[in-house]
Amino acid sequence: MMHSTLLRNVKLYWQGDVVEGNVLIADGAVKAVSKREFTAETIVDGEGFLAIPGGIDLHAHIYDPEHTDHEDWASGSLAALYGGVTTLIDMPLRVSVDNLEVLKLKISEATRSSYVNYGVTGGFINERNYQCIRDLVEHGVITFKFFTCRPFTIRDEAIPRALKLIADHNAIAVFHAEDESLIDFREESQRARSDPAAYHESRSGYAEASAIMKACYYAAETGARVHIAHLSSKEGVEALRFLKQRGIRVTAEVTPHHLYFTKSDAEKLGNLVKVAPTLKGAEDREELWRGLSEGVIDTLASDNAPAPLNKKQGDVWSAWSGVPSLEVMIPLLYTLGFLQGRLSLKRLIEVVAENPAKILGVYPVKGSLGVGSHADIVVLDTRRSRVISARSHHHKVEWNPWEGVELRGVPYHVFVNGHVIVEKGELVGEPGKGIYIGDLSKRV
Image 1 (cartoon, rainbow, N blue to C red):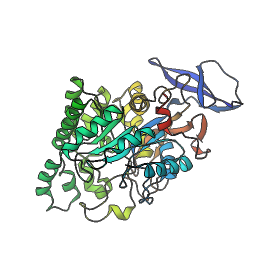
Image 2: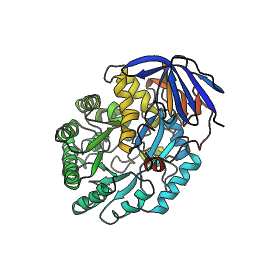
Image 3: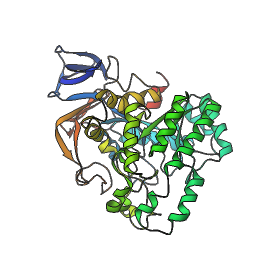
Image 4: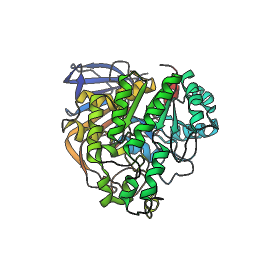
């Protein structure tokens, strides 16, 4: 028998307006959206808050079998829930996902421990392993990670051959796009310095734009779809705008940390904000917001990559790169984007849910609140705020670069495939209610 749940008394973005209504859920899917009341076995009161489709994060470092002290599926997916994310695509961290053994291990861990839906990105793709694309696609892998720079650089001559396989299998090449030669050139003058700002100044927007242009023209030659990871600079935005105007099949993401921090924050936070690509200036940050609003940038992605505090300490050049970022995802965009007038509500929903679902080929089953869609729903508390702190966050690490930052639009209720996992801000569900996106993408 189907269990029915009524999410009542919520605000919904519907055909250009915010309306009051109720959502009837049964068998894990949205059965009706209406102003009228429905009968149901379980009733969850939305208290007049805003309900949106659950976020889909295309780029999160969640589980590496050799680095489980950083994050794992239990901690990462729990942090995702409290950031409004109901689907995570796990990105390789250090162990390459280029064979079925590692892929099956990652899926097995997620099936057992994840609170949310899950997928896996293959890679790191290089001249030695790009033939793995064939096998991994057959097992539901949609996205494959390429590096144009250290530490996992693919040689130029292998890129078109790998991209041809990407095109032949209707997959997506996700590029960490920075020009290795320009990084080397800049580092020559920066390596003598030991201050954290030196690291951020070692990678310029020109290095990013150069690699974006190269990757996208290789993709145009081979017919492949390309997705640019963690855009960080105004030059990168300009390159993307140019390429999109010429019909290149490219999408792009931006992270919470590139939308919030600038390289000047390294003076206070030091290695805690060491990330790659590096933080840039305030002008770059504003151009990223503009690109996100105008559609040059398609999605928000966490690039979640926490590490234990001891690995973030010491020399800036050897310290671990990455931050915990899942738990600020939608609250940060709601607070600094929607409430401050940088993003419309329509655009916010597009970049956190609708667009990533379309990129993965699972829309409107995921990324929508339409009838028939999976009931991945986040109800945002639009009245109260939450102060971010390592003392209360759900990441595995004991620090947080957003310590003390106050955000609104925090998740109040969270549904995953119709199951209530978070209710009134409290965890009430168990792991195992998510599905493997790779299975879904083969059916949609």
